[in-house]
Length: 271
Image (cartoon, rainbow, N blue to C red; front, side, top):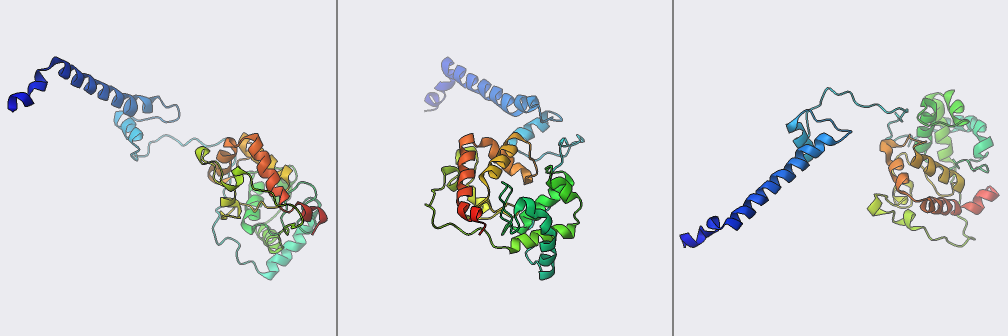
């Protein structure tokens, strides 16, 4: 029994196979845990152990390397679920007065006829965040940037509260129901694209994300293209940039047309 059990160690081919397997294991481990982490252009390992920890996903001690700052301004707005949920009548009234300056682009009742976003019934937190970003330079627009520059924080709260108080565009029940495109209803899981409604309403709402139903198709398309090209970068944690970059031009068109069509007739008639 003992002789038969130890016969494998007397077989030259078996010994060679074991040795070859061991060499391959060491080589693969060296390439995966040491060589590849050291060759990454955006990650600098402090040493051999640091490279191994990086490849294994183990938290490393902070290095003295200064973090790379972006070459553009990012949004500094902290959005919370309770943000602007309890607007009082005085705030809404002040916002109505300030909103007269917005009517030329966004309509006297918050319904735009100029491919600007419809603000009536929009989430207050979404409007407030965009105004703050226009003011700080995290988002840029030839009209909105100088307008937001002169607003106080209370002004932004009042305007956001006023538009959130107004009713949203009613659904046009005379129009044939348009089936939501795949990118809107299901997203594209293999490309890490969630359904649009999971953040923008209909399925769920993510704080700070705008309500898209009834928004002009030209506006939605322009913003998705700006996110995809990196021309707009005030989204939190690059969420919209990562999504838009993965969307095809056809998917962008389909999403824009779908959301615009939901209340298109109401938008045109000014209801």
